[in-house]
Image 1: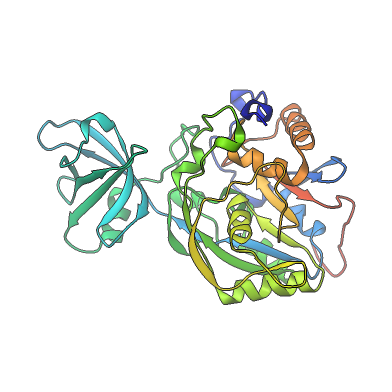
Image 2: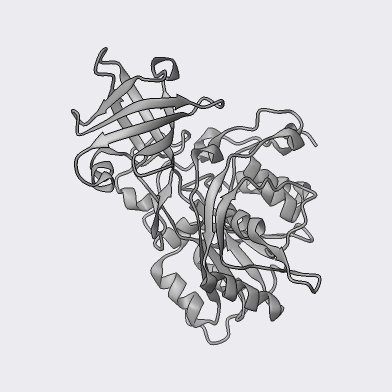
Length: 358
């Protein structure tokens, strides 16, 4: 299986640069994972394709303003530091630019000295462990000095940083948003719950590694970055109850998918279940993978040759996914983080409107 097998042609102008005024007004491409059949809707129509008894799994991580712009006090050189993972109160694993200027022992000043950092260690992958010094509360200083770490393909400045957060974002820790969730509004989530669909919230702190390209020709040789996740007892119980009743577990985004698939354990009856758990996951899902808990997936359109398009291909088949992407390009869908959405389902004709006012 070659990385090039997951390539497709995307006109640059289809990369969404700004979020829509109304989150739920984005377009929605329905893909039947068995037949490859497609249907064009709007995201607010998603409720029509959710059945009472289904469960939506949502990632409630919160993006931190993880991009820090500073200078080297001794030379005045401009430095960028991206916070990737908190290791202790004052130490973070980071991505730095330019790396050649930041060897072990180098210092960086942010906000005229409001925050300072020292490079403690260079890791094998080029990342740096940075120890920070400051007076006060780190989160408040970061909120003042940091910028939202938008993906490299977004060149516009974000007017409202809350638009790179889901409306249910709760726990600080991500360097990137779980973007499939950006389409939901509080109103739409309430209507979904009122219809009898359960909401299970899990946490996976998304790292910038999600944007790193696959650099090997053979997919199976790619090594995934590690990300921290947590599933509490409430979420585990909701998902287990949904599976036991024979209803669908529908993940909102690849991060929610990777979370529950990482934590799935045999239930002793030929199926799988969840328990309260937390830890690091580097699960890599690509075609040939057998899903343990996930039935359907709400997701955005992903970069060519990325691990994310490989994941959706594992669910719906590479040919079906690439055909859907080709159709999305023809229909001028908006791609990537601020773009439109896809619902990979098991039956695009199954519409349930009973008792639901639109």
